[in-house]
Length: 100
Image 1 (cartoon, rainbow, N blue to C red):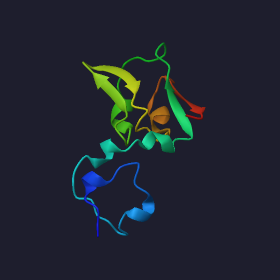
Image 2 (cartoon, helix red, strand yellow):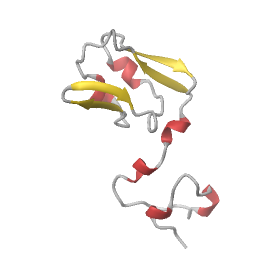
Image 3 (cartoon, one colour):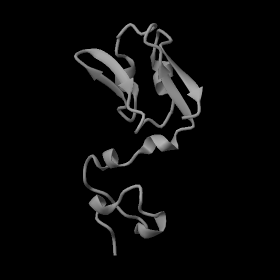
Image 4 (cartoon, rainbow, N blue to C red):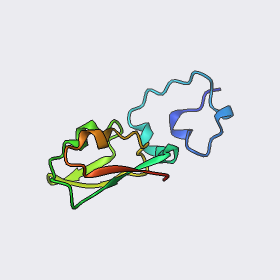
């Protein structure tokens, strides 16, 4: 029997999830701390940041937060450490560091 999406969380073993389960509900990834998958961590160098916000739309996981046209810290709970933000920043205000 398939588990409904609201019953699936980080405590469910993979063996307990029905093979080929399709999740049709939006925003279920917010319940999973995918940042634990990360082997490298982006670090925001505030002194180099020009607040151009070019990094924000490039993040595939929406982990670069912005409020009132100002960039904020990373959402490390969901950042997988892909490094796309490093390439998107023209000012070198983001660098990758090994580890979580």
